[in-house]
Image 1 (tube, rainbow, N blue to C red):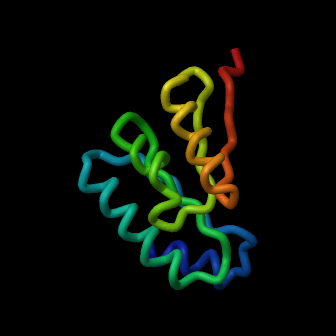
Image 2 (cartoon, rainbow, N blue to C red; image 1 turned 135 degrees about the vertical axis):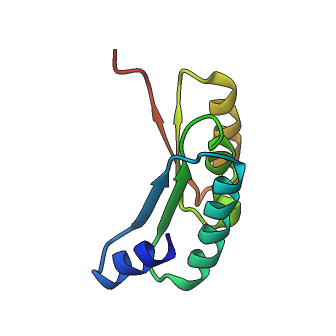
Amino acid sequence: MIDRLEKMESFDADICKIAVMPQNKNDVVRLLNVTYTMSRKLSKPLITMSMGTIGVISRICGETFGSSLTFASQDHFFITRCFMKIMIRHNHFHLILMGNPY
């Protein structure tokens, strides 16, 4: 993951983003460690996230580790409320809400 993010910056990407599908909790912890490390190293905005149920925590606490943006679904009302509270408290953190397109 670190190599990919470094390559994105070397290609002068506007944003360095990586999304992963974790197989277990260790994968999520690894992503958060990479996020923290690279947020201190990169000069570009960084977005990271783990998908699926296991990865929810990475989307809720990503800002703490250096991710600049997160995603949530309006279909998960409780989680969306948590994201909104985070966004209000930390106005530099951005949230994209996506509803069900069907």
